[in-house]
Length: 69
Image (cartoon, rainbow, N blue to C red; front, side, top):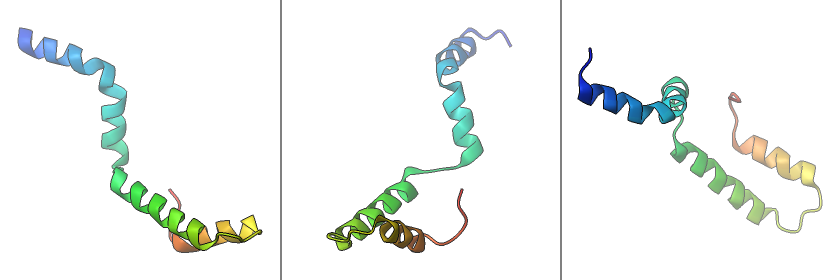
């Protein structure tokens, strides 16, 4: 279009282009991730003293049933 203000705007966005495209493509937000991290911390506190790490990871997998992304 040749509009000077629009061209300046696009030059400022250029370094962030990969992040913008990834955000539009994958639709992830941090609230889900924070909730998962919190749940894992609770499981870890409950599992204090267990010696079997396989059981710990099984508990984590059981806490999040469904499809893996």
